[in-house]
Image (cartoon, rainbow, N blue to C red; front, side, top):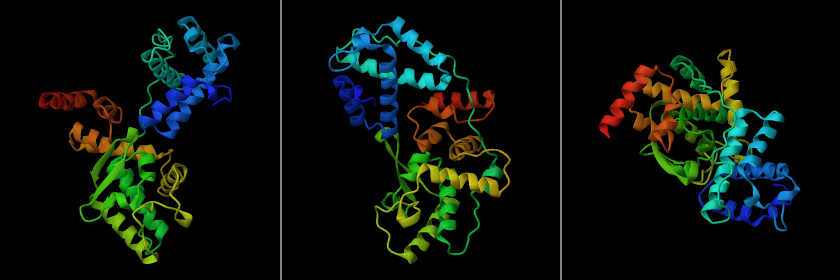
Length: 304
């Protein structure tokens, strides 16, 4: 956040509300960046003694702000995210009586083209996660367990990196996942993922004791793997099996959801597994024909 904006009392109080609501550091950084962008483009006339005079912003100024973003070459998806963050901030200001209206409420950005997430075939996914056993090599065992769990559970990348051994009940195979917005959920670990996780844990236990707080997936000196490191593991494995297109970690999550649906899993069950707050979010991950999706949605609504 710009130095001047960091002292804005309304921005500071909004930040505290987001923290109390359990928003992630990435979300906080995104909001602060977009508020700084707005504050920097509205002009000096909108600055007061303590910060921005947010109540002076109106719809014409909001429209000009969007035009300036377009003129600067911002992508439609970036503008959509910025507008979403600004609407959230002004809703907060209006709710607390600091502004009369949200100047961004009826302002829309350029249409964001819908890009369907990449999905592997079941054969490609099976090849990707089937890392050779590698005898007792901890790194190979780790990568096998990571990829199996990622694909079979549909975890978010941040959720996977945040797992600790204390979250896993080896006896029952239950895994406590710390999801977005502070929403925890328990998911089952079964089949190859459970076997790979057990084999990996056995190797680590032979090398030394494991604490409940120890990250499940760690690198050198026991440090938790970063999202960048996991992405590198996925890309390396995709090259090893000869995939001719870019495979991201999210492709495993999307593939998990799609393959479950193709095997007639219930949409509500997929929603619970992925940790989606709404069924509509789950639908975005599914690559099926509209007729087939309509049938499954009809069945869900009939049963509710």
